[in-house]
Amino acid sequence: MTATSTGMGCPSTAIAVEELARVGVTSVIRVGSSAGLQAGIAPGDLLVSEGSFRNDGTTDAYVPKGFPAVPDPGLTLTLTRHAQRIAAASGTRAHTGISASDDAFYAETPEWIARLSGMGILNVEMEASAMYVVARLRGLRAGMICACSSNLVDGASLYSEKNAALKDGWMRSIEAALETAVELEL
Image 1 (cartoon, rainbow, N blue to C red):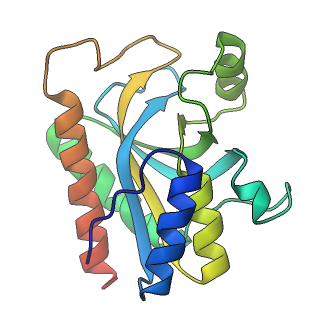
Image 2: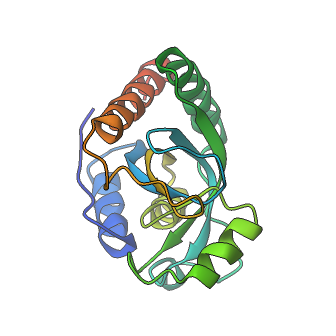
């Protein structure tokens, strides 16, 4: 088992997954932070991705526009189960749904956020689509769990507060990822 920083965004994530595949890694689980896009997702809650809306440029270099960016189903179900148990024990919640992978951290307009939310997109982040596409092409299992750092619909943000909720969310997401890896013998 190894911990690897992909850096930020799809280009560096694609490089990391490609290089991990070349050294024999068979499964990747992204942990980190992400912004919620549905009302009621609280900062510190866990977010498990069931797929990613490809709003990035990197995956277009790998596959045609209609190709889906999806995680491994078994890994995702196991990750969801652990996330729900861990969140419930801590008094927070775990959410599952489709994420969006955008290229520009500060480029989301209110109109774009409203459109993503209106489509039922759970959260927005910057790496999952590349991880899923490259993993699928290279025969790897992939999944993602993040801690919610802010809610772009409700306006709630951990970055504006002086508390440990985001750090605690990261720790819960790491715990869920590790328990998934052990259970599935990844």
